[in-house]
Image (cartoon, rainbow, N blue to C red; front, side):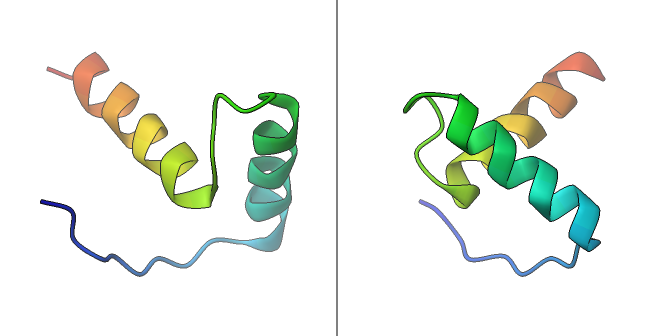
Length: 47
């Protein structure tokens, strides 16, 4: 089950996120998907 989450980011980080999504050629579907993948990678790398 997915839950809604609200976050705040500085504009520079948001613009970098948009660039990554555009460059992904469909691998990252949207902002939520990109952030979810980044958090999963972070959590798995810090076990």
